[in-house]
Length: 497
Image (tube, rainbow, N blue to C red; front, side):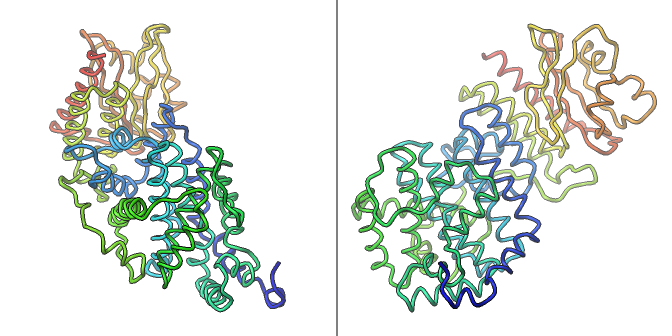
């Protein structure tokens, strides 16, 4: 219960809750985090949804590629040049969790003084990386889930640091004077513990119940975990407690107390703990470098700065330029298409499955040419219908039409296996040649390209890409040649099945 002084004054967090309600980014951040957390591992649609969510944000794409190309993430000499490739090489769960970190970073730090909250974010990132290291030898899915829970365990305190820094300062002063923990001091000073604030915010963001359970405060007495859920919960909060201890003025004493409390569940020896901390710290540094977060003068930052600088790129990733023309095409179109071609060729050589090659090629076309929506449509042998197999963009382009029996632009182009560029669908002749379902389902489209995928002179599918604006010129000869080369990679992958 709040003490008498707390009850006698206005709610010190009312300004924070008002700011949260008015902060335009946080509701959408919560929606994105909930959506990412609910994606299922190793599900084809979930993998594609994750890639689509990342590609919708150029900045997010750039930072993920930068991070995927650091030494501890990348698994080979070739740079990672596509989001799809990052998912294939790093694993679905790891890319999802890194993306959640980036989304949280953008949402929380938007409009805040970065220097003021950077130390708080240091702790969240280090806790997540340490939790992953702690369970890495047990189970990869448990490790990634613990990483999410550790990172989100102190969202309540992080938001107070951003939106009510004076209140956080009072909490810390009380914790020192009364020799109690910060969460208990928050309960007395603010009427809510940090754990209660975290629970409130994460429920507002609709995170899955298993994440909520892993974030829930542990009892004073900690026993050895008996189930997977308990192991994830204890590992996440052990990692967060270690990260917090390292930021204390008397770090060694705080760390010893933490290790003693969690000893029934986790009791790493000094060498094990140092190895895990070093690995987690290197990953934290890499994340911060990818996000352009510089070090602060904090004990935790000094710990990170003392570690070896091993995370430099050995080869640069090709990131889509933020500078775009009126059509949305990035300045480095040719570089992205060439990188996608190299990526697809390398995947073929490694024997990567057809779906991954398709997504790599489709992503290169989508990102490299700045289309609003892109799809690969394949003919279904059983029904004879052309159906969407993979796509990027929002809303996703969804095709389902028969290969024969109707006379319209799509059927004609596919019958002759002819590459097609439509500069403006509102032109009378074009509109008259389009099928009724296109005018109904593709109302946002103003221009598009259609590139048949032919085997033996017969179209078995096609690439489709559109824009919401007229495109009088279409692809340059160089771009068209590169796109055709990318298309050939898909054909090669199909033949290799």
